[in-house]
Amino acid sequence: MIEVDELIMETLDDLPCRVFKYRAVTKDPTYIVFYIWNEHDIFYADDDPIGTASMITVSIYSDDEAKPLVKLVKTKLRGAGFSIVSSHSVYNEETDRIQNIIEISCEDINSPEANFDHE
Image (cartoon, rainbow, N blue to C red):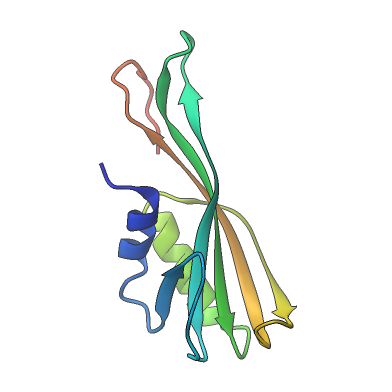
């Protein structure tokens, strides 16, 4: 089974900018950094874990708002099964760039006992 971070890297690998996990070491004008800030088991009625839920922050750093890139990233993440929780932009003084923040979530249901459809 593919890990969440691998899935994100695979999903975003063909973008016109580099993608980093946790921290970027680059002088590129546009880049993406993501991190998983919460992972926990999902339980079924009998208290047996049936999967994992993850909350992830994806930040697109750029000199401008990069609206086309933000839209493309959201589309690719949705297509890979992630849910968009929230999205907003802020000016990041530390990097002197606009930071487009996309909060996403996903649930990996991996148990045959879970007899419901999950997308």
